Structure formats: C-alpha cells, structure tokens
Length: 338
Image (tube, rainbow, N blue to C red; front, side, top):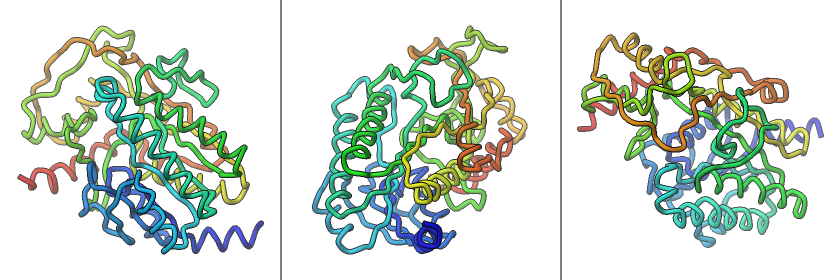
C-alpha cells in the first residue's frame, strides 16, 4: 500500500460538508494549505460564505440527493469530512425532530450517495455528548455511551450506522469525539461566530469587548475546586490537525477508528473568566445563576489513544493561548461587524 497510499494522500480531493461553519472553515483552510483539492458543500443556514476562503464552494443542502450526485459526478472525490450537524443541546430537547432529520437522516443520504459513487473514506465530526454523565474522568474511548439528550443520541446513532456500513459495504470511517472546540485561526482570517452564540469562551469575550452586558455562571456548587463546571478546551487548529492525521492513518491502514480529542486537562468556568481578564486586560460583570439541568461537573478527555495512534499532540494546549486567538477574532472582526 506504501507508494499508492502516499500518492493518494498527497493528491487527495476532499469534500468538506459544512465547510462554511466554525470547524469546517478552519478545516478547509488547513487542507488547502497542505495541498489538497477541497470542495465545500454548505447550505449557509448556519455558516457564512465569506468563511470559505479556499478551494471551491457549492451552495446546496446535504439532504438533496441531486446536489450530492452533481458533486460526486463532477469532482473526483476521494474522501468526505462531515461537519454539517445541528449542535445546540437545548434546542435538540425542544425540537428533536429537526435534529434527527438533519443529523441522522441527512447523513444517511450522504452515505448512500457516497456508496453510489464508490467513495469509501469518511471522517465524522462526533461529540463528547455521546458519553452522557461520566462515570469517570478523564474519559477514554472505552467509557460507556449513554447520551442524555437528542443531540448526543443523533451523533451516537451515526456512529452505529458507520459501524454497520463498514461491515456491510466496506465504508471506512473515523469518528472524532470533540470535547470543547475553542479559539480561532491565529492568522485572524477565521473564527467562531454562532448565532446565537452558546459557547463559553466567545460569550466571555463578548462581555469583555462590551458586546454583552455580563457573563453568567450556571451554578457554583459543583464538586470541583471552585464550585464551577470544569471543561476540556481544544484549539480549533489542533482539532483540525487531528482530522488530517486520522484520514491519513485510515488510508494507510484501511481500518475504521474512533478517537476522543481534548487537551487532557480541564479548566473551570471561573478559571476561564480569570484567564480572559488576564489576556484582555479588561474587567466585566459576572452574574451567578442557577445550575442548568444536564450539566456534568467535569468533562475532560483522555486523548492517549489519539496521541499514540495518530502521533497527535496539541500545539496550543495553554488556555491563555487559545483565548488570545479568539480575542483577536472578537476585536478585529466581530466587533467591527456592527
């Protein structure tokens, strides 16, 4: 497999589904800079056209077989990376049908279109939400899977589907379970801009920049050092690097795989707030609120398997470094959008 694998990896053509979103747009940039041909598919319901700065762009819906047939017929796609999922836990509880339709049904449409065109390498954006309430931390790949919301269940369903598609059709897949993606492109070209924003670091930065009145802490009586929830933050570029390494290894070995991705150390909400004050040099109002149902006290990844199998190591492990890149995006782009 040696020479053929190397040639395929160097000259690869990759479809990035959801490439106009936060993680997808950073992935498109990283792949393009490494010399890959990249085609982005996005319906722009959550993403932004100006975030796709590299490769070719196709505006269309993941659930439209005609769009997929057009792409696979007109481009020599070697692999697909799939980021086009709805991700808000609370919304998934209020409107589960929307999540099962997009995250599961539309993914099936994508997989079947791939099979029709004999494309059998798939990278799936999964989540730590598949684990539910942790029995222990840090969480490794062997931890039980018991998601407590429809969002997590949709992701776990797709993981099961991919196992079956491997067994039945030989489709190879790698599922990457993220904990908390954070930060922004160090060059300042790309960053996080969800609407509405729900992630902690950009919300705190909005408070620091004055675009938000305050930052709310949901509960300060958890069994942690300072009483606030602890989470594992991974820089967006490190996350994308893991995707590239995972695809390369899948091509090399011909085997499917599952990896947990994080820094392996957690930071509490108060620690993130304190680090943000240090990085930005600004103070802001902090409001204490009640606990949110379903928020585990601690979620930290054990990424030893990815470290060993992929040779992957985060290049931005420090919280302040992650916040610095996000602050640059907040002040130099988001604050100027009006």
